[in-house]
Image (tube, rainbow, N blue to C red; front, side, top):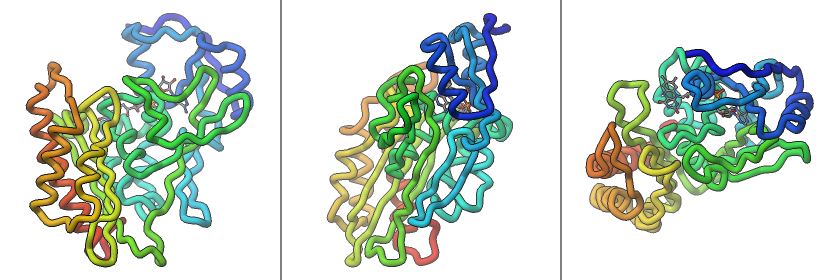
Length: 301
Ligand SMILES: Cc1cc2nc3c(=O)[nH]c(=O)nc-3n(C[C@H](O)[C@H](O)[C@H](O)COP(=O)(O)OP(=O)(O)OC[C@H]3O[C@@H](n4cnc5c(N)ncnc54)[C@H](O)[C@@H]3O)c2cc1C
């Protein structure tokens, strides 16, 4: 299948891209890596009259660390560049660990971080990871940039806080572990897919913190492929706060996540009951790994 005809623009600057989006409004769509948009156009599921290709805007591909240890990832940074980045590995072990689970290497070569987040597929890994990391999305529109917490960015099935004319320009991830911090952090990502690289049947990103007496002081548990978007297991997280993270507690929290926090769908890929079972097993595994990392000196943070 070929896409319906469209007008194609390839601006050199962010201002130019924003002006084009302002002129064409809802008729325009942004082209990033094209790994979701182009198939959708070929299947005639998306019919934008105008495409604004962000590929030439160098500032959207910058990946830097600020003085305070905050990782700043330009929206057009490819998923492969993040996967291979030493800077990302040093500053966000969770993001580094997750990248190989996103699709296949060929797709990660072109697919971008911003494209994955803006597309907001409920089975995508990066939205769940960004919520677990408490990341901030920088959205830029004609009136300038605004900062939206990841938790508020994903608003439903394939929908986000992006308005027509907006671009997702950057993602900010704060460094949680500092030398002075009394909390020791650990994180983990895991998922089950039919074949490695396929969209997950269920996945989970976990970030935990342990205080000086070994009690859980921070717990973020975010699941994917169990709802319309990334789903925070808030009851399970609450059940861990102030507790010693022993195997019994972790198993109880996983049970809460599977039975109280999610209402997974049945579809051609898996039944709701199977997804609940996967969620229970994966949350327990991810929590076990994350707490082990939090309490083991030298583990990735
Ligand atoms: C076979 C296959 C398997 C895949 N498996 C997985 C998987 O396991 N996990 C996973 O997460 N993904 C998977 N993907 C999707 C892949 O990760 C895509 O790269 C990603 O979803 C979209 O990124 P992109 O850069 O290609 O965006 P595009 O396809 O170019 O754009 C996607 C959407 O986001 C919008 N958009 C893009 N960038 C911006 C921006 N900066 N600001 C505002 N709007 C923007 C576009 O207008 C479009 O609506 C798979 C894709 C394929 C083809």
